[in-house]
Length: 212
Image 1 (spheres, helix red, strand yellow):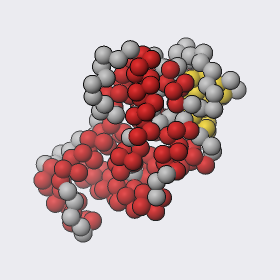
Image 2 (cartoon, helix red, strand yellow):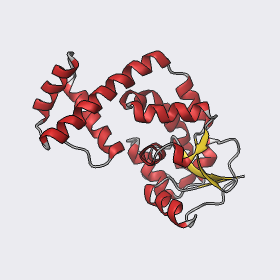
Image 3 (cartoon, one colour):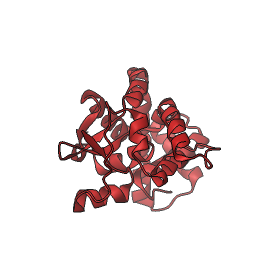
């Protein structure tokens, strides 16, 4: 029997520190995504919808929203993985090597917060231990990706992340155009500025209030 928590950061923080007030009583069968989603509160489902930038769903009732998200979350994997750096992708791979379930402290708070906010993982209690589970439908989408191609993307993204953090620490504030030129100089390759703007927004979602 697995009890599933609401995937929100404050819920998780409260749960981890004070012992399970926000824990649901849902029993999850083989980490089925629809069952996991159905165990969440409506506010958490709406948050996942917003974080995946899904439109025309605001009027859906809970059952309808659960069904829609159960389809849209796995379908988002090929696009979302294009924005991941080594931190997020390593967490994903670690979960996959553990058949989609591992102790919550082994995955990192940032990963718990971000990956649960898009429905890829779900904080849970298994045999009285705080864990995270990855639905089989999400794992399947990652298994379908070409690992060599993804690692090329992820490693490049990590380089960009490292450069951006270095620029922020050194300059404190910087115009996008200047950051774009410096990143191209460091990488010695062209970087699409629209992609860079999207990537910085993604970093803000993952790392918190990140901005140039």
